[in-house]
Length: 341
Image (cartoon, rainbow, N blue to C red; front, side, top):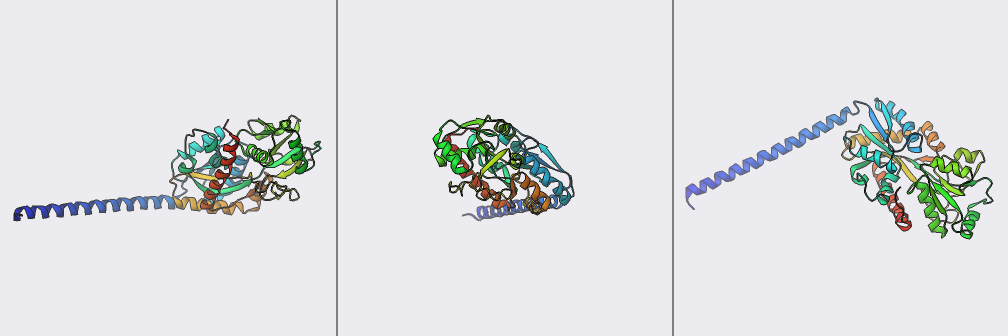
């Protein structure tokens, strides 16, 4: 090879190496600047009000839990915490709004576990992917369901209730807050495990279903907590709890697992989520503060009054619980061919 050509090739090689080095330095500087900017933003967080979107109407369990936690969270963060309700489509509307919000820690979602563990199974098309577009921040409460009948019912315990369903296929009716709701899934799980059949009457919410039970239009239902005052007043009889553990409000009432349906678990976990990409430091701070708040007497009492149990978890444990629930509920949804309203 001629000396002139060799020199030219060497020069080009050196130029390419210099350009590559410069590009690497630029990328490093950009990454450093981005990290520094993120760290600065995280260190300054929160610098303005934090919004909690509840993806169900006012007055429900999710709304009440969000407000019970929001007030002490406001004190802990030193910034206003505003609760906004955006219900509809089984929680999908509010979930979608948060999923598409900036991932800066200023917009959170309070939702039942159903949006993550149930909705993907019953809605063929969702406007967002809960598993990819949202990240778990903190679990708040494990919400139980209670199997109730009217006080006048001759059925005194679950054994008699089960025998009655078995002897009268299709002659008993139950209500629920809607297709795919936790009370609906609880009933379908019970029917599947007992080999019984009862007629489902879906309502737009737990309250109208409870009203019809009290009025004698229904034979039974799984209640998500709003029937507790009527149980205490003696208007309804509580036969069993659809949870792995007994309710602290009714320690003498057995679970369905204890009543013979081994492994029965219809609990859902309500909690907080954030848009994917929210800084981990912000999520960690929120998780720490919310778990601390859940341990306070006032919040524990409020959640228990709703029929729930405080459920402090790490974000990783919360995510694992959602995945476990999705597998469990997905199975019964496919078996019973349940679709969304």
